[in-house]
Structure formats: structure tokens, C-alpha cells
Length: 302
Image 1 (cartoon, rainbow, N blue to C red):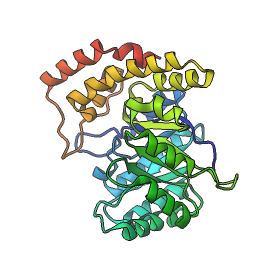
Image 2: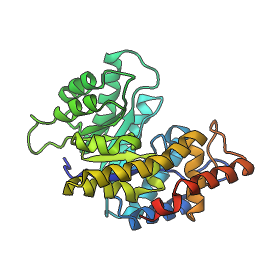
Image 3: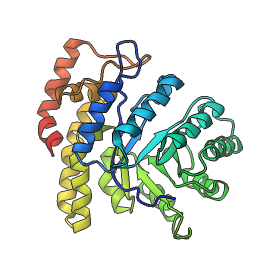
Image 4: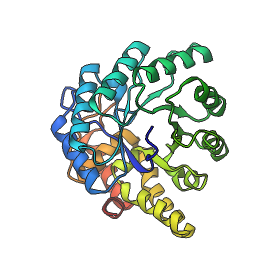
């Protein structure tokens, strides 16, 4: 089990062709951009990567392309969540075969109770037994601590979780579930709310996975470096700078804002996939002006 998961991880956009397919050429370009920014890992085909909106065939092609382009330089976690447990397990098996470093999944789309959730996650993890499995948890929707405590007992290759929620108390509880695990078994709880990265890191979250890291991975790497050196004031200032840009993205719609920002940075990720709505050229102009006013260029350059 790999214990090396840490640092700043973009929840990678999946560039689209005009018909919603996977633009693998743009994907390679985007990955090279991230590698040049010295990100610590990539989380592919999650919510930001529109994994649930992409065909299983395209998801496999994206995984193969991403792993090939990365070439082992940083770890890659593949989100395999699906409406179907069988399909999610098949995608997990494929990710393991192609050399992914971990697999992840959202909660079951059709909630059938806790026991069904345990079985759903167990089937996915069992399909990739040589990889750490990371449930993707949205804080507030469930008792994430109780769920992870049970999954830790049931799933031998569970490696932690991606926790996207505002409760620093809850994330700290989940992190502490790893304290009594054997030293050879990894336990990484990634924080998933970009706006709270500094605070989650102070609770000992060793890594963060987030949408806005496509546009500005640098500030998040610098936040962690500042915390490591004890410069908490500078870490907080960086968080506030990043949050100003994040606030603009939230106001306009994060998915659309990410594409407009990346296009301004030289990488055209194509349209959003239906049922998400791509914004009009007029609204795009307004959004770009707001992003620039909030410090897009400086934050992206870090």
C-alpha cells in the first residue's frame, strides 16, 4: 500500500470535443501543464472531470492516456464511481490493470441504506485489490466518521478518503482513524473544499484534491510549504487570495468558470457536457473580466 499520497492534487478537468467526447490531445496538454506546475498528483474523472457524464469507453481511454502521459512522475487516482456497481467495479479493475495508483468512488447514486453502501464500496475495492481505495465523501450528507470507521474494518485495501465538507472536527476524526493502523498500511484523508485547505491541513490532512487547482495549483503548494515552515500568517494570506478567485468561480458556476479560466491560460478544454450548460460568449466576457480582477494571472503564475 502506497503511503506517499500528499500535497496539492488537481481534480482534473476532462477536455471535451464538440460532441462531448474525450479530447485526448487537449488532455495531454493539460497534464503537461500540471506537471510543469509541480503538482503532487492527479485525481481524474471525478465531479470536475465529469466522469459520470462520460461513456465507459471514453473513461477507459482517458485513464489510459492520463497514465501514459504522466509516465510515473506523480501518482494518479482514478474516480470510478458509477450508477451501476458492476460498471464501477469494472472501471476499477481497468484502472488497476493500466497502472493507476489508487481508485475512488462517490457514494452510491441510488442510496439503499448503509449495508448497501458497504457492499457497493466493497465490490469496487475488491475489483482492484492491489490499489488503495478512497471513498469520495460529501460532508454533511452522511455521518462520514461512522461510515469510514466501518469501511476501515470491512475493506482491507481502503487507503483513506476524499472528504469534501466544511467540518474540521469531522475531518480530524476521520484522519485519526488511521492512528492505530499497522505502519505498512496507508491512511490518507484528502481535503476536498479548496476554500478550507489551510484549516484541513492544520488538522493533519496531508493532501488536498480540488477543482480550482486546475487553474491555480501554485498557491496550494505554497500554503502547505508555509504551514510546514510555521508561517501560518502567510499560509492564511494565500488562502484568502485563492478564495477571492474561488468566490468569482462560485458566483458564475465553477464548471464554466474553470473552462473560461483555462482557455485564458492557453488550454481550450472545450464545452461542458450536457446536462451542464456552457455559458454564452457574452457571459464569458463578463466572467473573464471578473476572474482577471480577482487575480487570475498572478495566482495561476505561482
